[in-house]
Amino acid sequence: MKKSVVTLAMLCTFAGVTSAESSVTVYGNIDVGIVYEDGSVAAPLGEKTLKVTSGVAKSSRLGFRGVEDLGGGLKASFTLETGYCADGATDADPYCGADNQFMSRKAFVALDGGFGSVQLGRQDSASYSHQKAVDPFGNGLAGRMGNLFAAQKRLNNAIAYSLPGMGGFNATLAYAAGEKPGDTSASRLIDTAVSYTQGPFYVGLGYDKSYDSSGNAKVKIANIGATYDFGMAKGYLSYQTTKDDQPAGTKDENDILVGVSVPLGQGKLMASHIQHSDERNVPAPQDAHQTGIGYIYSMSKRTQLYTSYAKVSNDNGGTKKVGNDSESGSGDKAFNLGVLHSF
Image 1 (cartoon, rainbow, N blue to C red):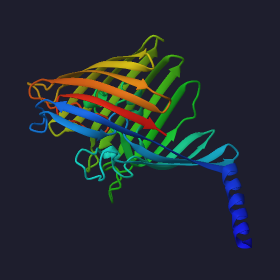
Image 2 (cartoon, helix red, strand yellow):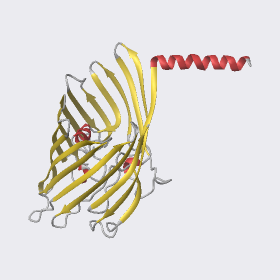
Image 3 (cartoon, helix red, strand yellow):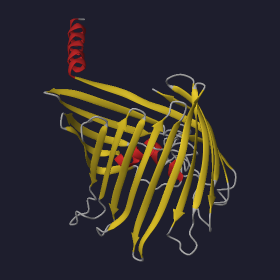
């Protein structure tokens, strides 16, 4: 009995110290939806596929976020975030997207202070976070911009520095090491994003450059976009250029998005149109355009119902498909209907 009391007292003391100096938050979401795909892009899989999918609007995830106050305005923090398949018992499911795999999302430690923030580990790319901000679908659901826009979603072996917020101005610069013995330039990636927010207005620029195994610049992606909230509606505009340096020379892709979201009842209606211009397959460019529409209904602060439909039209044998936040899709049209719960 005495031993139990002593043990309990020690645990209470430890818990008090922990709550006073540090904290850990458990968070995440579970997203499961019905996905119907059609079209002949990836025949025969592209011909009428019906699925129950994990992570349609937002990839299902479980995360742990911790922070410790080191004093003098300095804090240490960490984030560990794993995806999971809510629609099946195995990550080997061919329809379980890469973001839903175990420990596929974030794992980094950071130091934060008046100087800004330094993060080390696997983390979201700043340019991709900017892309999501200028897409009415948040780069999820069938209408996502990522069906046509190229993106570098996450960085391995990365060190990133973010400036402290200054009057609505934010900037992040990241370097992801290629880790090839004897060649520090090989397979590395440089990523950056700058943005400015003032009231209803947002404007930002994202840029990343990746290098091949020989240390030569391979793919360069630059995106500039803006949003403005008029109250009755929010407008979105984004332009992106992608350059892929191949032995035959630089080949470009250009994308432009125009979108809108409108508050409607307890949710919002979203729509966008994307035009994709291809200069990789001259004289028969594989241009494409996508039109998407969707609605998210908020049942509470944590639970949402969603639906979305999008269709891609390809030119000259193009193979752009309609996917969602976790999957690249199999056809040139798709319909989503599902539930997202956050915790």
